Image 1 (cartoon, rainbow, N blue to C red):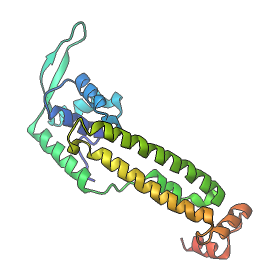
Image 2: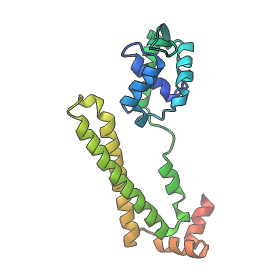
Image 3: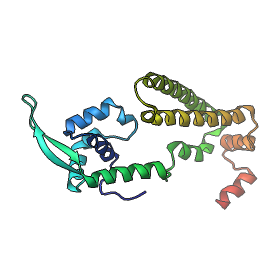
Length: 210
C-alpha cells in the first residue's frame, strides 16, 4: 500500500463529499452518517477536524468561505482542489486494485484453533455461523430496501458484503461438517492432545519443523 500524506480513511470519506460540492465539516459528518459510510470505513468521528486540517495542509482541500447558522460559531467551508481530486481517484484506484496485506482477525484465530480442542472449536464455529447467517439476512434486507432508491453502482459495496459473508458462511459450514462428522484428518489426535497435553508423534514432528 502506498504511503499517503493523509492516510486516515476518514480523509478519503471527506474527499468523497467535497468532490460533490463545497461543505463545512459539520455537514461533511452529517452526509457521511446519513449515507452509512461509517459501515464502509473505520471512521473515528473525533478525528474529523484533524483530518480536515491535514487535507488542507497538504493542498487537497481549500477554504472558500464560511457560513453562520443562528447562534452557532462560523463554520469554514471547504472545496476539493485539483490535487485533492487526483489524490481521491488514486486512493480509490489503489483500494480497488490492491489486495490488503493485513490478515483478517478470523484467520489469526484459525491459526491457533488447536488450543481449543475439537469440541470447543465446534461450539465457537457454530456461534460464528449463526452470526454470519444473521448478518447475511440483514444485509439482503438492506439491499432490497435500497434497490428502488438508487442505481446499482451505488450498491455494489452492499452486494460485496453479502457475497463475502455468504462465502465465509459456506466455508465455516463445510469445516464444521468435517469436525462434527469426525472426518477431519487427525481429529482424534487433536482431541487427545487437548485432553492430555501430550503431542502425538506426528504432531510433534510437525511442530518441531515449524
